[in-house]
Image 1 (tube, helix red, strand yellow):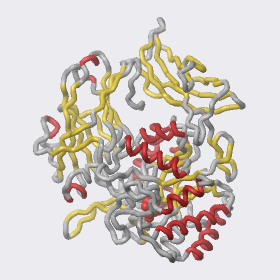
Image 2 (cartoon, protein in one colour):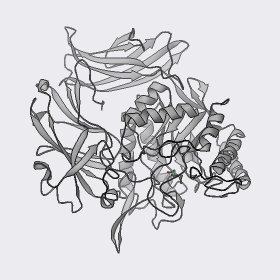
Image 3 (cartoon, helix red, strand yellow):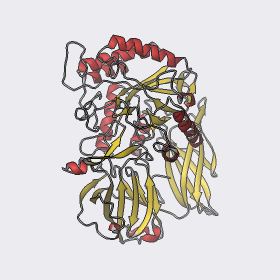
Image 4 (cartoon, helix red, strand yellow):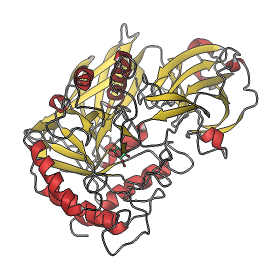
Length: 593
Ligand code: GCB
């Protein structure tokens, strides 16, 4: 699926703004056909935004169930004869959409796009009603999973991941016009030999009888560097300017469908960064050079808008990454907005791209160890149906992000149970799904402290080891010398596996402004000492090829006795003010600062 775009043959109209919004706790709206007319008793809601913190009402913030969104849209008058598509960049965690009274699509999964051809239901120049029934409940068959527990006070949504279940329409909605004969998808795979780059292209087209595919590659200043024809082929790029960490150089590929007279029937553009990614022994190579990841596990998380994409916050967060010397981040714990990946491409920031498979572990809850009273993998809990939803989430992530040069690793899950036979059986085929969808990038998953070296049964399938460890925080709390010994010992074990290791999480909750002369957990000084200890451990082990601090910034979580106004492991506060750790990281990552 291509993202809506404006080209010589395509046009798009943005549907962001104020939509009508109504909760539907009784799930009555579908039978009552709320989509058939203006939504009664509606309140205002901004799109894109998580709905939770926008409204001053606790019942809305913690609501789970059916949620209705609606707006009218006038189809541009110039779109007569065009194919009209309605495109949602995401709706969390699932949605069904109507155009007037016509149900046009349903989608499961809260962080990947979906769209429908609505040509037959619209007329250029006329208005239609667009209604989305979004549902944010989590079950054992959703990714991420959760369960609704019946309690004396009523049903409660329980989940095992440590961030607030923000939901709604977080990302943009588009109407777009394409020709009937059209390009459906473009895939690029890049490489280079010496100073000559290569761009393998595959173009999928629809209704293309009698039409040819033509591709043109332009450099950053618009000069044509290569051209080709056919649904698939390879372009050569002389004197290639490689894409690399810190150098987000992009070529532009234009793919066209042309008729025998040479007229362009459809045209789409695709950014291309020419680079290679490879795991060799314990090294992680980008363009054949060893790469060391510095940066963070992040979250899409801001006051009021929750998980919504916002350009000012996007630019500011990347400014801070640059300031601190981060060359990379992980999209913990779900696919981020496509705008984020486009921005990473343009700025040479390296990305570990993760599915929303977080919390598949009944030994953990909200970042805290302790049984949750369920078996993780069983016919009644996370089962074959869940695995299929998970497989689809992997396919959709890769289909969406395969062309981003910034993406160098697929992470198919965060901290699942991984030390049992059930886990091994569950994950083995999912690695195959990822590799089939993309044979070019390393695949991994993020291992949890509950499955230390020697006990994990899933790491065998991974190309790269990604470890989250909290020595000195959840264990050896306040005892950094003890933490250093235990951590070094475990990491030396992992180093014998012969694979590169990225420490995808290490961190200590820190209340900004809390200072201590002695190393007290929660103080800014302890966070700095904790990071220093970790860095000594990493620097002693060659197989460690990266460090991602947990987290870039403080973020919202469910309430609990371990969380004071959210998770406080940020190097920055939630409003992006630096803690002492930010300066310490900057000194390490930028060397001389
Ligand atoms: C983890 C999780 C992350 C939590 C973090 C914590 O291991 O991957 O989602 O927020 O620990 O702070 O407990």
